[in-house]
Length: 410
Image (cartoon, rainbow, N blue to C red; front, side):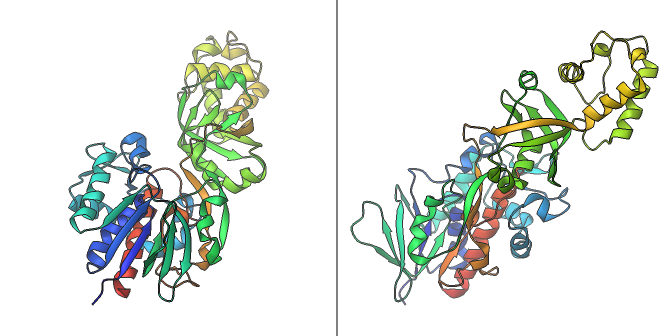
């Protein structure tokens, strides 16, 4: 019997994982992976600062919606088929020892993203998956059975019985123009997971300061996030700000990245609790200057900045603070409004929200409802996550589900 030919478009995490899994679910198939860049898994090699945060233990995840702003219902269904435990077991079988950090992020014990990439590529090579680099897809057209694929600088289209699109997120809608002839519905992409610019020179002067537990929210909305907050030469970054940007990606894009960010520098601590804390500091340190005593969650530089923002002199004594001033200080610590004037202009974000509309995708197989044998996996779909290994887990899960579906149909 003639082998079925399967084309995977994109040698990123989802594409390579689907290819590696197809070696088990459809060993009789002829699998080709096409990548427009000159190397596979280029983005994976950069994740986690080159260490590759490949998944998460999910031990601290209260709901999937909190980590998947878009696509949480789909991911809940797919996790019944292949979840983080399955992904961790898969990589350990392939020789990648893993470690779970205190923040529940999972890394290779070697702390080398290259080891993760090597494991995927080695399995693909062992089972005869054919990898084609520097091949940019220009068009997909239906054939009597399967699809014709046209690549740049190639005269004749190639025929495949099934196609899996795993091209990743695209910052521009034109990045998915190769789907135009099929009429596939798409959601316009916008950036997600970005740091923001704040119009406050004194705050930006504190670049490098980290508040380990902060809460950030967008004033006038219910959008908020918690975690470490990093002050940069542009404004705000770190896990808390990146998570907020993910949940607010479309809201901020619609407002040209101009909004008011309210910061609780003490995490989840409320104003009344903070007022009690400050009153205690005032009683216990009545004769000391404000510059020399501050809440332990802050460092001295940030504390002095917050005093300055309220026109309080660092040389003032704690005993001189009136109840009204203590209340003002408590409010500033727990609800500090900062003007956001843009997102980081250096295009550092790795994730976009948007892509192929989930309404057209079979949630059991990730096959397109109108185009049989055409599958989608990874960030090319309108699914994205916050930081912490969740985006890569989505790639492993979707790659595995597509491989299972193809294995049943080949």
